Structures are given as C-alpha cells and as structure tokens.
Length: 272
Image: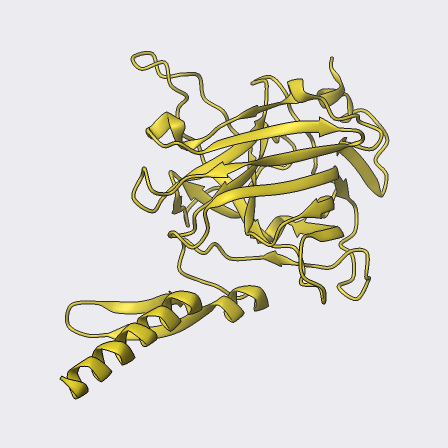
C-alpha cells in the first residue's frame, strides 16, 4: 500500500495534504499531458523549487487554429484517493500570473485502446479559476483557491456531459492542472507556483483574507459565465434569429479593436 491509498485508513481530520506540506512534492508524481498528442505545440512542466511546485510552460494556439492546452496530471493508474469526508480541494498559491486555469478530477481510468495504444477518454470533472485581483500590478502572491465539489462540471472530450453519474469521491483516480486557450483569449507563457494541494473538511468563508473564494462554478466552453472576473472581461449578447439563437461572449479587448477599426473605416469613407 502506498501513501495514496493509505489515507483511506487514516483518521480523517479537518485538513489533509495531498501534495506539498507534509506530503513533499515529487516530480515523479506528475507528468505532462499537452496538445502535442493532437498535433499542437504547447508544452508544460512541473518543477520542484524548494517547498513549492511550479506549473509553467507555453500555450500555443496558432498550430491548432485558436485551440490549445497544456497540463500536468498525476501519474500511475493504480492510485486512488478517498476524499468523501471533505468539502473540496484547496490550492495554496505562492505566486502566479492572472491567467485562467482549470483543475480536473477523474474517478475512472480505462486501459489503452488495443488498436491505437492511446488512452481511452473518460469523464473529467472540471473547474476553472483565476487568482483574486490585487491593487498593485504584476504577479499575484500568497493566495488560496478553494474548489468545492459542487463547482466541478462533468465533461467528455471537452463537452459538457449533463447526464453524467455523480462524481465518486471515494475513488478519485487522477488530478490535473491545465492551462488552455478559452477560445483564443489567452496564449503564451504561463506560471503558477503552488505551495500545496489539500482537501479540507469545511468550506472557508469568503470573508477570510487567506482563503478567498475565487473559483468559477461554470465552464467558459459551456457558454455560461458567472464570475466577476469574467464579467469584467466579456460582453454578453443575446442572439435570436431564424438561423441562430443563444448567448454570445465577446472579449472586451477584441470589441475595442473592432470598434476602432469601424471608426477608421467610417472616417475613411467620409473624407474620400
């Protein structure tokens, strides 16, 4: 029995370290899972630095036409965590940029496909998060992100899986941290230095300065956005016509560029 299955028989407490803290970080516990498997050029790394793990790399979105992802996942198909006595996952961040990340859990792994040798797809439980804003510019330091179980959304091959069975918290098989493009809204270098990953018995209050609740309970890809950070970055438009109906998200930077281009064309037409 290794340390991953041993926690089943340990007496449950208010907080349990999974990585970092009393469970030292090890590069052998993590491996990359990037868009290179689909022909992309993104690359991620997890480097152990003192008592922290730095998830960093480069997100390329040009090769796959606006898409792209870079991630690190736990290794080993025989590992299993029983997290059923806890309220959610907490990531204590030493230093990070202001990009949007995704935390992922899996409760099922299938053997590789006999024909291709590639891993077969299973349901992923995902939550997107950003570090809370700060008054001064630059990297964000010493923040915590708490992800309650009900904020995780089931997806299958990148699409929301509404009829998925409930997440089996007694048999968590894999954890991942991902950086992705979110429809081309972010790319390039990224960096997130993590002190530790723990599960805690009780959800922290949002008023506690050390434990700000800064998760996004909805996936951007699913077309629903509710976090304050996202609302500040996107315009939401309702479209209803014979051809299409629904909700469209327009990045504010992109909208500003389009508005300037329209004004330039208008002035050009007037003065010609």
